[in-house]
Image 1 (tube, rainbow, N blue to C red):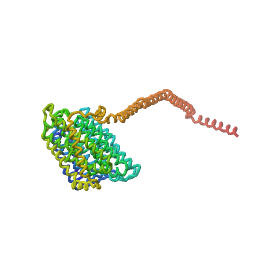
Image 2: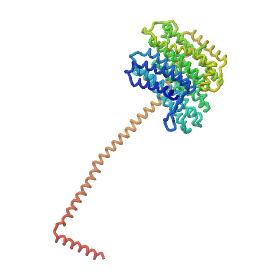
Image 3: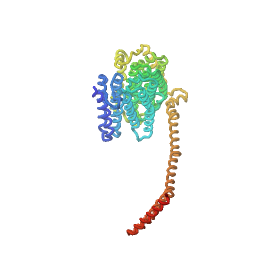
Image 4: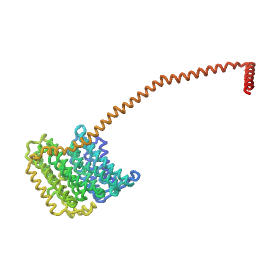
Amino acid sequence: MSALLWTLIALPLGAGVLLALAGRRADRAAPLLAVGVSATALGLAITASLRHPAVEAPLMEGLPFRIAVDGLSGVLVVTVTAVTLAVLLFSVAEFGAHEARARFFGLMLLFAGSMLVTVTATTLPVLLMSWEVMGATSWALIGYWWREPERTAAADTAFLTTRAADLGLYLAAGAALAAGPGPLTLDGLASSDEPWLSFVTAGILIAAFGKSAQLPFSFWLSRAMQGPSPVSALLHSAAMVVAGAYLLLRTGPLLDASGWGADAAAWVGGATAIALGLVAVAQTDLKQLLAASTCAQIGFMVLAAGVGATTGGALQLMAHAAAKSLLFLMAGAWLTAWGTQRLPELRGAARAYRTVGVLCTVCVLSLAGLPPLSLWAAKDVLLAGALEDSPLLYATGLAAAVLSAVYSVKILRFVWDRPERQTSDGRAIPRGAVAPLTLLALACIVLTPVAFPPVRDALGRYLGAQAQPSPPIWEYALSGALALAASAVAWGWGTRLVPLPDRLKAGSANWLGLERAAHVLLVSPTLRIARAAAAFDDRVLDRAVVASARGTLGLARWTNRFVEEAVDGAVEGIATASRRLGAWARRPQTGQLHQYLAQAVAAFSVIAVVLVLVR
């Protein structure tokens, strides 16, 4: 059992390191090796999800290395490996021989391996290590085309933003250590005492919101769209951005025990689903629309974690991974063929590539929440938990679902519209790219029955979730009817611009000004403090050091000129006097016996006189 889990995480990590170190020499073999490794990892993940293996190894005193597969992590390991395989199959057809394929496939495997460790970690130290590797590899993948400054700047923004939020995990780990010694297991965090419990909760929430691009950290996902489309398909559908939502679903008891963490998660998730849904509606760039919709859809998962709807959150995660990974890959395919990802310039793209267009339609309709596709049913399962918690929260979720229909149908309205031009360069979508897209589209259909009894009940038992509310028929009907109505309005409105106030329209198109706000509130003050510190260093500390050095040199010169001369003169004077005294002392020493006798008589005479006088 332990060998199974060790192999599951070691295989992609080892193969990723091997390809990354081999460099261009392994470009020819990299695609086949990466696909083979990911296919093997998928088989191992399915086996692990059924057997639930666990391993432990010594790491630090009192903090062992522990990973395990249970219900929730079992769903994640299968989802991550399945999407990784589909994305790598697409990448084989997408990345030509001129690309650094060994580096690309190696980094993708490294990222997938670190994500597998993240979702199977049962202790905070292991989670921290994998969390860091995941962040570093995501930075390298977003900036894969590193010769283009715009892309590397986008990678830096994504990395620094998530890295700043990741400090929350260190806060949580420090507070958990302060609360009491122990292995820092994720399941045991809820047993911490106040005030440490609130610090642990706050740290977990901050790290999760940052990694999952929730408010106010959402803007980094917009910049991350500079990366290759396969990177977005993996990182921003089933892996990196869902890691935060997964962490909140995993630490549900902690959120409940804090007394405020669950409500904070639920309302931040709901607010993100609404706000970023509006951002998605305002976008005219396909990848930016998909990025904003990713934030909004993950907002549903965060909401599910806040209301304790673990089953609904897991269903939303799986269905979103299938739909969104296909849409990101499709955006990359159309960018390759048409040379653009702007929606007005993609008119007729679905007509030109009908197979891809049909597959795109299936996933877009699923994203829109239209029955009978998977995201429609998944949302109702988690919104049933929201309704039990707060009717206002349920209404917020329904409003976000309506926005999902609007921005999703907006994609279809453009790509199925009559084309205004032919493809820009005549390049066709690679045939090898269609197979993985087809598998992902089928997943959007196949996952629908999972949201209904008896499969949903079996999934709940597998997840170990407590009894959760089951959505009645009217909830399915209401959400489906709202989605259909919103879709009809969006389709009828066509490709015209939404009649919104200019300020609201500009704010939504610019991601609510979140990046500008981050620069004004955090980046600029930090840079000003850094510049002030640098100026203080240059003008005060450096000058003080230089003045001290100059004073030391002056003192040394004065010492050399005056003190050393005085000391040398004194030494020479003592030496001269010693020589003279020695010369005087040698004069009586003539070597003649009668002179020594006379000197002795004289000396004794003097002594006798002194003695007589003293007495």
